Image 1 (tube, rainbow, N blue to C red):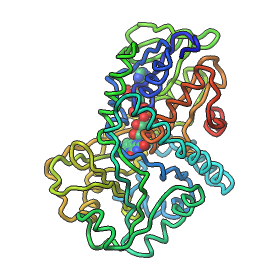
Image 2 (cartoon, protein in one colour; image 1 turned 90 degrees about the vertical axis):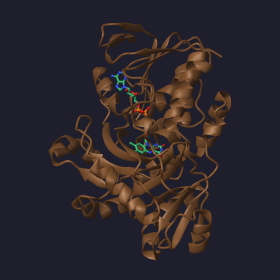
Image 3 (cartoon, helix red, strand yellow; image 1 turned 180 degrees about the vertical axis):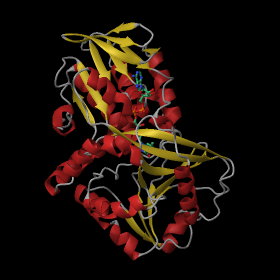
Image 4 (cartoon, helix red, strand yellow; image 1 turned 120 degrees about the vertical axis):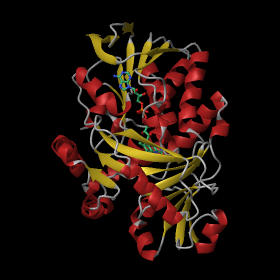
Length: 415
Ligand SMILES: Cc1cc2nc3c(=O)[nH]c(=O)nc-3n(C[C@H](O)[C@H](O)[C@H](O)COP(=O)(O)OP(=O)(O)OC[C@H]3O[C@@H](n4cnc5c(N)ncnc54)[C@H](O)[C@@H]3O)c2cc1C
């Protein structure tokens, strides 16, 4: 039911913007979804497809810091900072440092867990309304450990999940291979996260949602947003080709590019990009039902509609630098250690920009400066996971409905 908020411009047609636009249109509003490209071609195109409800821990936690020197010195390590980008990264990195105080970490964990506890309620409702429930797999994710030392190193993660009540099951060797026969016998232990299910094709999910948005009467405009007409709030969104799209409410959800748009409104967000890579293997020679993560080797493998996807890694090099596909190749090499019969001849490689905030928690917020402006960005490694929840929460904010959780931890002016 519409609360008569006037036309709403949603900027960015990734999984976040498309979900927000769909939800607002479904509630009876007049919504224009704007993207410089076709929907779903940003980070949402090639992510690892995981509804990763157990991966909300802040990246600034002690166990990450402890491994950072080793990771940064290893050219094949899971985190890479391009030296030329280091000066630009420094302000973000100082905020990352500030987010590692123990009391801050407890707050950030609680903020991530509060969203993750909502994820399936919101996702199931979204998939049901759109008739897309078949796009969600039934199986969870296995976290792999070669020995007790690797398992102990990940213990902190599991303890936090226990504290917040997320389901998991610890498995030994034979039970692991009963679940996934393609795994090497070198894996001594695993933790099954049954609720870390995956979608079969994250790009198709965006496309289907955008089709449904259109079928409800929504409008999609292709064009790059370069400015705003400001008055009491934003009155119109200006495109590079000179067009202006009138709107009384504007939602900015352009992924890793949202920082640039927020600066135009005098409301800077410390947004960086954590670049990640995938290799999509069309003819892998094995079959899998669960996704797998091997924390000590820092890669993920997900069975998807188009074969098996291997991905992960964090590369700090900004929005403009060309991809370095050696990082994707390292991940495949590691995946073969877990899956010895994996064949990767028929494969494509991809790089995407995760929108990353220094405290790991996304911004889901009304503007602190402009009436009728909202932000949904910084979803980092969990944009697909949080999409339905963010869509619902932003739709509540825009239409003046009290959201079901306290949104203070996700405010844009918290930095
Ligand atoms: C390798 C990798 C693996 C990942 N795995 C997972 C996973 O398993 N689970 C999970 O939950 N998340 C995962 N993520 C993270 C997830 O993909 C992102 O958090 C999510 O896609 C962000 O969605 P978004 O809509 O905010 O951004 P995007 O998908 O990047 O969309 C932003 C859109 O804004 C548009 N845009 C930008 N600037 C402008 C402008 N000025 N005017 C108009 N349009 C503009 C772009 O064209 C783009 O379409 C992964 C990411 C990567 C890179």
